[in-house]
Length: 290
Image 1 (tube, helix red, strand yellow):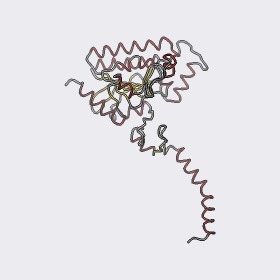
Image 2 (cartoon, rainbow, N blue to C red):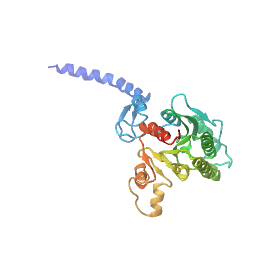
Image 3 (cartoon, rainbow, N blue to C red):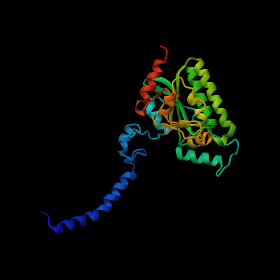
Image 4 (spheres, rainbow, N blue to C red):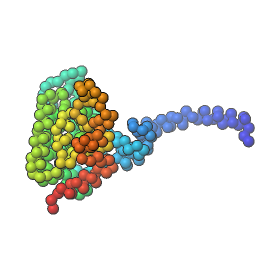
Protein backbone atom coordinates (compact mmCIF):
# COMPACT_ATOMS: atom_id res chain seq x y z
CA UNK A 1 0.00 0.00 0.00
CA UNK A 2 1.50 3.42 -0.91
CA UNK A 3 2.69 5.66 1.94
CA UNK A 4 0.71 8.78 2.80
CA UNK A 5 3.73 10.95 1.99
CA UNK A 6 4.07 9.49 -1.47
CA UNK A 7 0.41 10.21 -2.18
CA UNK A 8 0.90 13.84 -1.17
CA UNK A 9 3.96 14.01 -3.43
CA UNK A 10 1.94 12.56 -6.32
CA UNK A 11 -0.83 15.15 -5.89
CA UNK A 12 1.77 17.91 -5.64
CA UNK A 13 3.44 16.77 -8.86
CA UNK A 14 0.08 16.53 -10.60
CA UNK A 15 -0.83 20.05 -9.51
CA UNK A 16 2.46 21.34 -10.89
CA UNK A 17 2.01 19.66 -14.28
CA UNK A 18 -1.75 20.16 -14.71
CA UNK A 19 -1.54 23.79 -15.96
CA UNK A 20 0.78 22.76 -18.78
CA UNK A 21 -1.52 19.88 -19.68
CA UNK A 22 -4.47 22.24 -19.64
CA UNK A 23 -2.59 24.73 -21.82
CA UNK A 24 -1.71 21.94 -24.25
CA UNK A 25 -5.36 20.88 -24.46
CA UNK A 26 -6.42 24.49 -25.02
CA UNK A 27 -3.81 24.83 -27.77
CA UNK A 28 -5.11 21.67 -29.46
CA UNK A 29 -8.69 22.95 -29.39
CA UNK A 30 -7.55 26.40 -30.52
CA UNK A 31 -5.61 24.86 -33.38
CA UNK A 32 -8.85 23.36 -34.67
CA UNK A 33 -8.03 19.73 -33.90
CA UNK A 34 -11.43 19.30 -32.26
CA UNK A 35 -14.86 20.67 -33.12
CA UNK A 36 -17.86 20.95 -30.83
CA UNK A 37 -21.32 20.21 -32.25
CA UNK A 38 -23.77 23.11 -31.84
CA UNK A 39 -26.66 20.66 -31.54
CA UNK A 40 -25.56 17.87 -29.16
CA UNK A 41 -22.30 19.37 -27.74
CA UNK A 42 -20.36 16.28 -28.76
CA UNK A 43 -16.68 16.92 -29.47
CA UNK A 44 -15.34 15.34 -32.64
CA UNK A 45 -11.90 15.10 -34.20
CA UNK A 46 -12.05 17.75 -36.95
CA UNK A 47 -10.48 15.48 -39.57
CA UNK A 48 -13.19 12.88 -38.95
CA UNK A 49 -15.84 15.60 -39.21
CA UNK A 50 -14.43 16.85 -42.52
CA UNK A 51 -14.32 13.28 -43.84
CA UNK A 52 -18.03 13.04 -42.94
CA UNK A 53 -18.73 16.29 -44.88
CA UNK A 54 -19.18 18.34 -41.69
CA UNK A 55 -22.07 16.21 -40.45
CA UNK A 56 -21.95 15.41 -36.73
CA UNK A 57 -21.00 11.77 -36.16
CA UNK A 58 -23.18 11.61 -33.02
CA UNK A 59 -26.46 13.37 -33.83
CA UNK A 60 -26.30 13.96 -37.61
CA UNK A 61 -26.38 17.76 -37.29
CA UNK A 62 -25.36 19.41 -40.57
CA UNK A 63 -22.84 22.19 -39.93
CA UNK A 64 -22.83 25.10 -42.33
CA UNK A 65 -20.17 24.80 -45.05
CA UNK A 66 -18.68 27.31 -47.48
CA UNK A 67 -19.45 27.35 -51.20
CA UNK A 68 -16.01 25.94 -52.04
CA UNK A 69 -16.45 23.06 -49.58
CA UNK A 70 -19.83 22.35 -51.14
CA UNK A 71 -18.36 22.29 -54.65
CA UNK A 72 -15.65 19.84 -53.58
CA UNK A 73 -18.32 17.63 -52.01
CA UNK A 74 -20.50 17.55 -55.14
CA UNK A 75 -18.30 17.98 -58.20
CA UNK A 76 -15.86 15.38 -59.54
CA UNK A 77 -12.18 16.23 -59.09
CA UNK A 78 -10.57 18.40 -61.78
CA UNK A 79 -13.85 19.04 -63.64
CA UNK A 80 -14.94 22.40 -62.14
CA UNK A 81 -14.95 25.39 -64.50
CA UNK A 82 -16.05 28.62 -62.75
CA UNK A 83 -18.26 31.11 -64.57
CA UNK A 84 -18.43 34.92 -64.39
CA UNK A 85 -15.90 35.32 -61.59
CA UNK A 86 -15.27 38.90 -62.69
CA UNK A 87 -18.75 40.20 -61.83
CA UNK A 88 -18.57 42.69 -58.95
CA UNK A 89 -21.44 44.25 -56.96
CA UNK A 90 -21.94 48.01 -56.98
CA UNK A 91 -23.84 50.48 -54.81
CA UNK A 92 -26.41 51.96 -57.21
CA UNK A 93 -28.63 53.40 -54.44
CA UNK A 94 -25.71 54.77 -52.36
CA UNK A 95 -27.34 52.94 -49.46
CA UNK A 96 -26.20 53.87 -45.98
CA UNK A 97 -27.44 52.55 -42.65
CA UNK A 98 -24.93 52.22 -39.80
CA UNK A 99 -22.29 51.62 -42.46
CA UNK A 100 -22.16 52.45 -46.16
CA UNK A 101 -23.11 49.49 -48.36
CA UNK A 102 -19.94 49.90 -50.44
CA UNK A 103 -17.80 49.69 -47.29
CA UNK A 104 -19.66 46.62 -46.10
CA UNK A 105 -19.17 44.94 -49.46
CA UNK A 106 -15.42 45.51 -49.37
CA UNK A 107 -15.20 44.26 -45.79
CA UNK A 108 -17.19 41.09 -46.56
CA UNK A 109 -15.17 40.40 -49.70
CA UNK A 110 -11.98 40.66 -47.68
CA UNK A 111 -13.24 38.31 -44.96
CA UNK A 112 -14.72 35.65 -47.24
CA UNK A 113 -12.52 35.87 -50.34
CA UNK A 114 -15.71 35.97 -52.44
CA UNK A 115 -16.93 38.66 -54.82
CA UNK A 116 -20.58 38.06 -53.88
CA UNK A 117 -22.92 35.52 -52.27
CA UNK A 118 -22.92 32.91 -55.03
CA UNK A 119 -20.36 30.92 -57.00
CA UNK A 120 -21.39 29.41 -60.33
CA UNK A 121 -19.72 27.06 -62.76
CA UNK A 122 -19.81 23.90 -64.84
CA UNK A 123 -18.58 20.49 -63.82
CA UNK A 124 -19.33 16.80 -63.69
CA UNK A 125 -21.10 14.86 -60.99
CA UNK A 126 -20.27 11.15 -61.13
CA UNK A 127 -19.40 11.71 -64.79
CA UNK A 128 -22.58 13.59 -65.76
CA UNK A 129 -22.25 17.25 -66.82
CA UNK A 130 -24.07 19.81 -64.69
CA UNK A 131 -24.28 23.58 -64.18
CA UNK A 132 -24.05 24.39 -60.48
CA UNK A 133 -24.72 27.51 -58.43
CA UNK A 134 -23.79 27.52 -54.75
CA UNK A 135 -24.89 30.28 -52.40
CA UNK A 136 -22.69 31.14 -49.42
CA UNK A 137 -24.37 32.38 -46.23
CA UNK A 138 -21.12 33.98 -45.01
CA UNK A 139 -21.52 36.76 -47.59
CA UNK A 140 -24.15 39.09 -46.08
CA UNK A 141 -26.40 36.19 -45.13
CA UNK A 142 -26.39 34.81 -48.66
CA UNK A 143 -28.60 37.72 -49.68
CA UNK A 144 -29.65 37.99 -53.31
CA UNK A 145 -28.44 41.14 -55.03
CA UNK A 146 -27.95 42.04 -58.68
CA UNK A 147 -24.73 40.04 -59.04
CA UNK A 148 -26.28 36.92 -57.51
CA UNK A 149 -29.22 37.18 -59.91
CA UNK A 150 -27.00 37.84 -62.92
CA UNK A 151 -24.60 34.98 -62.19
CA UNK A 152 -27.40 32.46 -61.63
CA UNK A 153 -29.24 33.62 -64.76
CA UNK A 154 -26.11 33.31 -66.91
CA UNK A 155 -25.37 29.84 -65.48
CA UNK A 156 -28.92 28.67 -66.27
CA UNK A 157 -28.77 30.11 -69.81
CA UNK A 158 -25.38 28.46 -70.34
CA UNK A 159 -26.88 25.14 -69.22
CA UNK A 160 -29.88 25.57 -71.52
CA UNK A 161 -27.64 26.33 -74.50
CA UNK A 162 -25.55 23.22 -73.76
CA UNK A 163 -28.60 21.09 -72.88
CA UNK A 164 -27.44 20.02 -69.43
CA UNK A 165 -29.06 19.94 -65.99
CA UNK A 166 -28.91 22.77 -63.44
CA UNK A 167 -28.60 22.49 -59.66
CA UNK A 168 -28.60 25.42 -57.22
CA UNK A 169 -27.60 24.98 -53.58
CA UNK A 170 -29.71 27.57 -51.77
CA UNK A 171 -28.68 29.25 -48.50
CA UNK A 172 -30.04 32.76 -48.12
CA UNK A 173 -31.82 35.24 -45.93
CA UNK A 174 -33.61 36.58 -49.02
CA UNK A 175 -33.37 39.66 -51.22
CA UNK A 176 -30.64 42.19 -50.38
CA UNK A 177 -32.33 45.29 -48.99
CA UNK A 178 -29.34 47.53 -49.82
CA UNK A 179 -30.19 47.17 -53.52
CA UNK A 180 -33.93 47.70 -53.11
CA UNK A 181 -36.07 47.02 -56.20
CA UNK A 182 -32.98 45.98 -58.20
CA UNK A 183 -32.65 43.03 -55.84
CA UNK A 184 -36.33 42.06 -56.15
CA UNK A 185 -36.04 42.15 -59.96
CA UNK A 186 -33.64 39.20 -59.75
CA UNK A 187 -36.51 36.95 -58.67
CA UNK A 188 -38.26 37.47 -62.01
CA UNK A 189 -35.03 37.32 -64.02
CA UNK A 190 -33.90 33.98 -62.61
CA UNK A 191 -37.44 32.56 -62.82
CA UNK A 192 -37.64 33.55 -66.49
CA UNK A 193 -34.36 31.77 -67.26
CA UNK A 194 -35.63 28.68 -65.44
CA UNK A 195 -38.86 28.72 -67.44
CA UNK A 196 -36.88 28.71 -70.70
CA UNK A 197 -34.80 25.86 -69.27
CA UNK A 198 -38.02 23.95 -68.50
CA UNK A 199 -39.41 24.60 -71.99
CA UNK A 200 -36.25 22.97 -73.35
CA UNK A 201 -37.24 19.89 -71.28
CA UNK A 202 -34.12 20.08 -69.13
CA UNK A 203 -33.76 19.24 -65.44
CA UNK A 204 -33.50 21.78 -62.62
CA UNK A 205 -32.76 20.71 -59.04
CA UNK A 206 -32.84 23.21 -56.16
CA UNK A 207 -31.12 21.96 -52.99
CA UNK A 208 -32.46 23.76 -49.92
CA UNK A 209 -30.01 24.11 -47.03
CA UNK A 210 -30.12 25.97 -43.73
CA UNK A 211 -31.49 28.61 -44.01
CA UNK A 212 -33.43 29.27 -47.22
CA UNK A 213 -35.87 32.16 -46.78
CA UNK A 214 -37.34 35.37 -48.20
CA UNK A 215 -37.16 36.20 -51.88
CA UNK A 216 -35.08 33.11 -52.67
CA UNK A 217 -37.76 30.73 -51.38
CA UNK A 218 -40.39 32.89 -53.15
CA UNK A 219 -38.69 32.33 -56.50
CA UNK A 220 -36.06 29.91 -57.82
CA UNK A 221 -35.76 27.77 -54.68
CA UNK A 222 -39.31 26.46 -55.20
CA UNK A 223 -39.32 26.16 -59.00
CA UNK A 224 -37.48 22.87 -59.27
CA UNK A 225 -38.61 19.75 -61.08
CA UNK A 226 -37.53 17.85 -57.96
CA UNK A 227 -36.89 19.81 -54.76
CA UNK A 228 -34.28 18.39 -52.39
CA UNK A 229 -33.48 19.57 -48.86
CA UNK A 230 -30.95 18.83 -46.15
CA UNK A 231 -32.27 17.55 -42.80
CA UNK A 232 -33.61 20.10 -40.29
CA UNK A 233 -32.98 23.07 -42.56
CA UNK A 234 -35.03 26.21 -41.91
CA UNK A 235 -37.13 26.89 -45.01
CA UNK A 236 -39.77 29.60 -45.24
CA UNK A 237 -40.65 33.09 -46.40
CA UNK A 238 -41.32 35.29 -43.36
CA UNK A 239 -39.88 34.68 -39.92
CA UNK A 240 -41.64 32.53 -37.36
CA UNK A 241 -42.29 35.40 -34.93
CA UNK A 242 -43.76 37.60 -37.68
CA UNK A 243 -46.21 34.86 -38.68
CA UNK A 244 -47.22 34.12 -35.08
CA UNK A 245 -47.82 37.80 -34.36
CA UNK A 246 -49.84 38.17 -37.57
CA UNK A 247 -51.98 35.06 -37.06
CA UNK A 248 -52.07 35.45 -33.26
CA UNK A 249 -51.59 31.74 -32.77
CA UNK A 250 -48.79 29.35 -31.83
CA UNK A 251 -47.15 27.49 -34.71
CA UNK A 252 -46.01 23.83 -34.55
CA UNK A 253 -42.53 23.24 -33.12
CA UNK A 254 -41.25 21.82 -36.43
CA UNK A 255 -42.78 24.63 -38.51
CA UNK A 256 -40.55 25.81 -41.39
CA UNK A 257 -38.25 22.80 -41.21
CA UNK A 258 -37.39 20.42 -44.04
CA UNK A 259 -39.37 17.68 -42.32
CA UNK A 260 -42.48 19.87 -41.99
CA UNK A 261 -42.33 20.91 -45.64
CA UNK A 262 -41.88 17.30 -46.71
CA UNK A 263 -45.09 16.34 -44.88
CA UNK A 264 -46.95 19.24 -46.53
CA UNK A 265 -45.69 18.38 -50.03
CA UNK A 266 -43.43 21.39 -50.61
CA UNK A 267 -40.24 19.30 -50.62
CA UNK A 268 -39.85 16.06 -52.58
CA UNK A 269 -37.02 14.43 -50.63
CA UNK A 270 -34.77 15.08 -47.63
CA UNK A 271 -31.26 13.95 -48.43
CA UNK A 272 -28.42 13.79 -45.88
CA UNK A 273 -25.31 15.59 -47.12
CA UNK A 274 -23.28 12.40 -47.27
CA UNK A 275 -25.77 10.99 -49.80
CA UNK A 276 -26.37 14.20 -51.74
CA UNK A 277 -23.82 13.76 -54.53
CA UNK A 278 -24.99 10.26 -55.42
CA UNK A 279 -28.68 11.30 -55.26
CA UNK A 280 -28.18 14.32 -57.54
CA UNK A 281 -26.03 12.30 -59.95
CA UNK A 282 -28.67 9.58 -60.10
CA UNK A 283 -31.44 12.11 -60.83
CA UNK A 284 -29.35 13.75 -63.56
CA UNK A 285 -28.71 10.37 -65.22
CA UNK A 286 -32.40 9.44 -65.05
CA UNK A 287 -33.41 12.69 -66.75
CA UNK A 288 -30.70 12.75 -69.41
CA UNK A 289 -31.65 11.53 -72.83
CA UNK A 290 -29.27 9.01 -74.38
